[in-house]
Picture 1 (tube, rainbow, N blue to C red):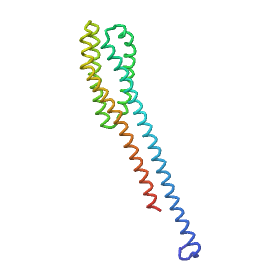
Picture 2 (cartoon, helix red, strand yellow):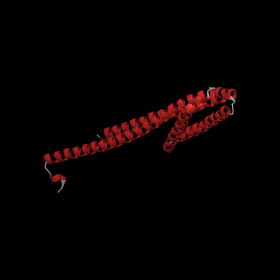
Picture 3 (cartoon, helix red, strand yellow):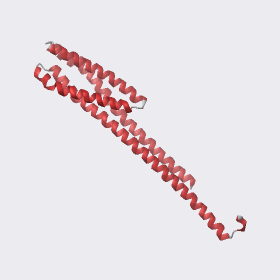
Picture 4 (cartoon, helix red, strand yellow):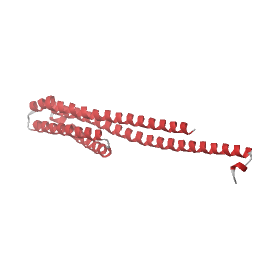
Amino acid sequence: MKIANLKMATKLWLAVALIIAALLGVIGFSAYRSAAVQADSDRQSAAYAARIDKATRWAGLTQANSARSYSVLLSSDPALAVALKDAIASTTAQIGELQKAIEAVADEPSDKAQLAKIAASRKVMLDLREEGRKMRAAGQANEAAELANGRFKAALATYLEDLNGFVTLQHQHAQESQQRIAESRLVTVKVAAVCI
């Protein structure tokens, strides 16, 4: 059967059917691509929200623990150290778990670099806290207070600054991800427009 042998109406209907089939193909492609982009967007948004949540909890726990540790080092009351000892140890363990969970999902080089900075500044702060505890236990309250107001306070500020830098970095990654997804959506619209 040749096209030349078909009636004019049949030729027109065939052309219309081909146009409709092409449009359905474009619509199908657009729907598939939009669904894939949306699924990727949902996955990335959930991942970044979880990272931001963990990093924010880490920062909050660190601030709470730093206030406790600072108070213990400054106080001349040994009962305060005893009262806060378990809370400090528990919070330190929670911070360690959060740090490990965040490190396990860190995939960006900038995240890994910032986490290495945080780990180093945390270690310095923890070492100074332990040094202050030993001074206090040895009856060197004035030296422990000097340590708290000097090196410990500076190390704590560095640690919190590094930690807040990580939270900011996670917010930046989330925004960049949303921009990439928006660009991908725009590509879908452009491809559909070109095909029509």
